[in-house]
Amino acid sequence: SQQGEEDPQALSIQEGENATMNCSYKTSINNLQWYRQNSGRGLVHLILIRSNEREKHSGRLRVTLDTSKKSSSLLITASRAADTASYFCATDYSGGGADGLTFGKGTHLIIQP
Amino acid sequence: DTAVSQTPKYLVTQMGNDKSIKCEQNLGHDTMYWYKQDSKKFLKIMFSYNNKELIINETVPNRFSPKSPDKAHLNLHINSLELGDSAVYFCASSQELAAELFFGEGSRLTVL
Image 1 (cartoon, rainbow over the protein chains, first blue to last red):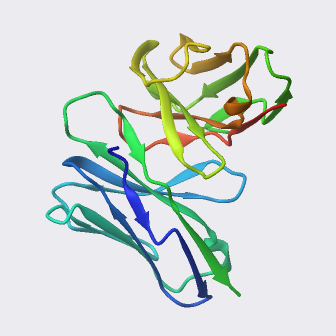
Image 2 (image 1 turned 180 degrees about the horizontal axis):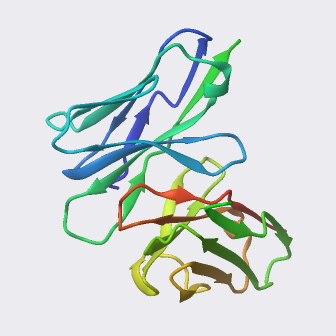
């Protein structure tokens, strides 16, 4: 399977703490994206990082990409109860086929108030 | 204005029935998708259309047939529904293949 794998599968932290989720993938990519899914809702795009980029920021979100290790991390700083959601990484593989994005299984993040 | 809208939101039906889910996007995107999310939240691409042309057709039963009457619409018709078809089906769109996806709110299909 070419899908990414998020780690951990579930994470529970106290409000105000930082949350870090990791994603590993198997083959070369064009870009990697992170999405959030609140319970019962559709996925919402957070950040896209290209294969030639190492780090991107958006508000309280920081994404890193290490293509040599085929891994990415999503850091949410100063977490809030509203950050409780599932977070997915999605990869655009550079194999040349029209495969679209391949999603991982997600990390379920719970922020305890 | 809802960017990607899909109907119905909930669908409960008996095995063997035929059902359709409709999707419309008002973002002017060229590419639309159907994804299936199972009970473990695993999201798998089913189909993708670019300007009404099928470009991704993953290994799904041929009971599933997408139809794109124009580039703003991508409908999913399912024949002879089976218990294993129970899932949440998401429509999405993007400006181009593998760019940022905009998802609908999902259609939860329950087959009894």
